[in-house]
Length: 431
Image 1 (cartoon, rainbow, N blue to C red):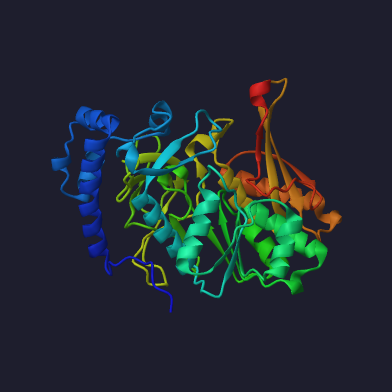
Image 2 (cartoon, helix red, strand yellow):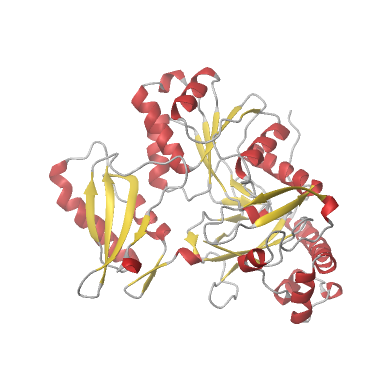
């Protein structure tokens, strides 16, 4: 019997008591360790001794990605350098990289709650986990591996890409679990099908991170591979990295590790709490992090809380899959659109695949136009193309309230990637 990595708390009340205790510690640690946090709290009129309950959380100032970028290369560091044992950094696609420092306790905590992900997915010591995510300065590869090793399963550190090697490993090592992006999951499923090796592999489960995985994409992967479960694993460099939650085998929402961080769902414009079940921005406050604690960090990720208790019985609360980012919002003819909304609509339409692209143009008349390229299903009857295009356009109009031109393309026409798939192409800035 493997040891458990689940929280020691058994009730919601015990969990809240733990959060209050650790929130007090975090505020004091950040205030005393980081000049930036001290200045922020002094400006907000908050002292560590003034934190008594979770209601006091709203008195604390927000932290943003700008705080991390402005403090480069060691932003918000709250411990002496001799306690830092590792750094990781984000991709830095929107400016300076966000560099995060980790103490040994941070690494140990991260390893422990990542192992919890594998436990939540009901893996065993007999599982063989093929880790097809990036290694290096990024947080992905090493966290999947150290969590797997702590859990007690076999880690196969394959890294991303190289389909020949991935397929060979699946056959030779009889991997039972694969960790990758959803886009690479689809790529692998199609490649296994193309090579005719499905009966030669033993893949049972897949764990997807780094990007939103749509229902349509998961259904296609399931059809091609026959896997029992596909799980979504959230994570960001600022908040340790991947592994900060996972949906259980009931797939009713992502259980997040509320013993390691507090999650608020706020309106991104007013920064007021949204009602449970409504979409808002994820704002996180860490409870154990030493190197770079986060206090009310605006992640820009959009999701909603899932009310009630999960059928699995866990006391750990749940949030929905990530809809998108508040700064990824498309403004099209005065309507705010998130790519995840388009994804959701397309997942409910039969006769199409999982891949699509949103293309935005501004034409000579000065108006904006949206073209939606959508792959047909492999068994699609071309005689129904016009009707299917009208149906897609109608559902987009009905659910998102915008008009689109739908262009159906053959299955496999749109590019596949072992990393995140690019789906939005906004050409309006070039006009």
